[in-house]
Length: 202
Ligand SMILES: Cc1cc2nc3c(=O)[nH]c(=O)nc-3n(C[C@H](O)[C@H](O)[C@H](O)COP(=O)(O)O)c2cc1C
Image (tube, rainbow, N blue to C red; front, side, top):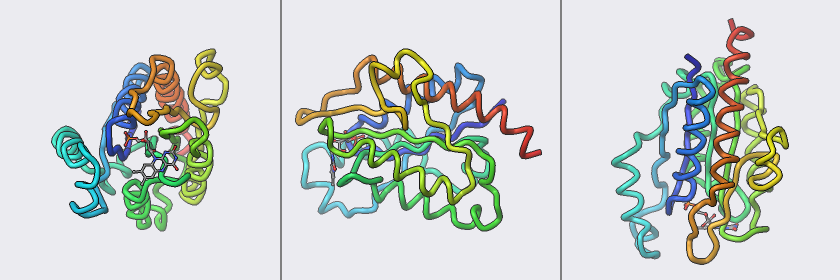
């Protein structure tokens, strides 16, 4: 079994939905999956500023454990999912990435597969900027970055070559069926690459 950690942050559910599709694809590709949700770093006074934020967080926290260092150690691949925040990764997911410094120092993430996906509210609101800049910490970790590219017909219809994505709009639309197909393809591809990399790590 190839171990796939899907570590995500989601405030209102788009990334959660994509993460579950990535998980389906990873399992179809032979992976055993842990789905983990990074926890809030902002206080309740911020979470209460928008209707539903606190309720969504409580619902998701009941479903998904917080990602740990042990999860990353266990993983043959880590797929990171984050909403776009001002064109970049959310601070909640970044806090988890920053917690992996000990593993980085011991070379324990080296030659693992790494991949990323995101969601924005507007079509050109920074989805590609978020995904490409997410590659940077993966490179520091020595991970083998696995983008979906255009390696499946669905990638011509949805997502980006850098990672799956969705656009939630002003009303918070759910990911489309094509968005979910792209996410499943990404999960499947990462599971296959992660299986191949295992023999290189010994
Ligand atoms: C603080 C903050 C910053 C955001 N920055 C952007 C942005 O730069 N571009 C964009 O299109 N959407 C931005 N959004 C919207 C989210 O990325 C978008 O709603 C996303 O679909 C949320 O995913 P989630 O439902 O998994 O939380 C921002 C939202 C918040 C709360």
